[in-house]
Image (tube, rainbow, N blue to C red; front, side, top):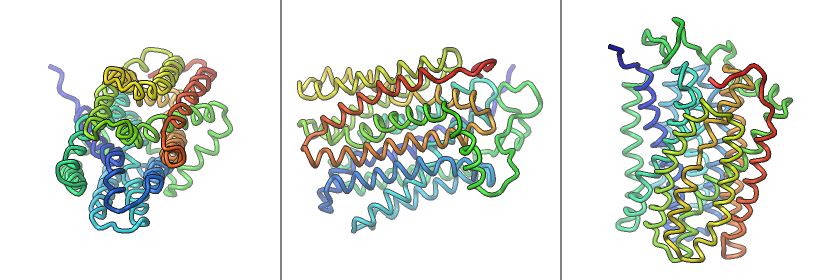
Length: 418
């Protein structure tokens, strides 16, 4: 009888770690209005802090990947989870706008960075020889699972009690996850006398091969090589638009957008979490498909369909049709971060196993730059026009541009998807 492989336990632990980091980051959307009401801050300022967080955690990704190569996966996960806990704890004491920017912009941005950027490909490369696309799909989907389970709960707690109780719930979950990481997270298959899942030889492929102890060198040397390749810019450009059209716009402003059309906060958060259900399905399925189907065409259709859905959203809201909104939530949810597994695969195929994590970190930094632009820009557009319509229509149009970027990426000869 085949014994249960510890790689799946690692997948389970990392899955829930990303859930906690994901809900911490995405919860900012349900705190916008409570922060407006309690502190008197305007929406563009709160959006700026959220935008800084999105940008910081994206920009930090390559350096997190480099530091992992120096100090190890487990220690870096514990430091990152501890940073998230510190940011959540400090939230109870914030009074000034610079507190908001420091805590929700810098600290929570840094704390969530490892979990939401390069951790998925690191775990897939280290613990899996086979089913890497599926592993990346499952781990990527976990960030949406946090929304699925907790956003409506947080919105309900805020409505029934106060935002401090919602923050306390996230802090408690972070502390529980910190303890689980201490006892169950392992550094590598070799550390416990295992091989990676599906490995034929008695040794897993380890991403920590570079002898340098300088995280800046580890982060910038692969970038210096990557920027000479056209495919890097096409992937980074498409991921900029991906971040702009998902976590930056929908993740930050969807709840406030719905409230502006007379939809209750809990209902709006429930619609966002409904997207999370289908994103869990869509991204896991995308990981499975990325092991089997041309990744370029997968990305082409993901961006095209997302663009179409964003163009239809203002119409659905103006009609006041819950049926159309549910259809949008299903359609958009399936596509939310389904782009990640094929993008990771294409990066691995072009740049190689050892360098792909760092290069993907830089590509994801472009994703978060787009998210930051949409987060802050959405707030500015709302303040200027008292409407989000231009922001959503513009994002939809840009998604069609992203679909063109990915379809012209050259396929590497002799390389097959692992």
